[in-house]
Length: 116
Length: 116
Image (cartoon, rainbow over all chains, first blue to last red; front, side, top):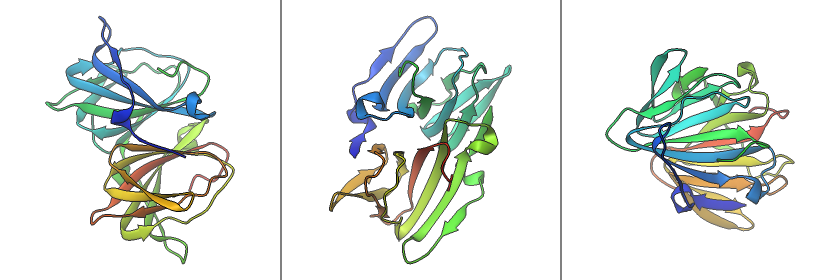
């Protein structure tokens, strides 16, 4: 059993023209011998956003804290602490912080793709 | 894409000599065509606990809110909002609420086993 607060996991800061103010952490993954799926936690600063993209694999997301929006088929939809989001493979998506505090969400992916 | 607050998902109440004060919800699963893994959310009332058991499949857990403890190899370990827990297959485990508020955690399992 592995027990660890996500904030104690080293973060990877992401910054480009596609991504702003995002830090990602792999909290449960292949290094833990989790062979079926991988848990990451992303922190998006106020004003920040993840890339708008699509890929073959799905996401299972749970919003831990803060206020955000997710891009779905041309519209931005509100997501808050306690919102679950399922993004099937090949569906375009993007997350942004829509509040004044950090926007923190858990995002799981199947094993076999890059963990972060 | 499916966007839904976990509290809007019908809950299954669990109560027996093995389980006390626990409600479970399948928030992303086979009904959503999530074919690789399943996200459930469990709410444990103050004084409540999940069954102590083991099974072949793993759990990937993230504590959303409240204070709890997890049973690991004869000891109870504290878990709080933001703690991630990886429980490999066949490892005995149990969760209990150790606070005065609801203890809420997300628990993911691979597809192919009972969702709740």
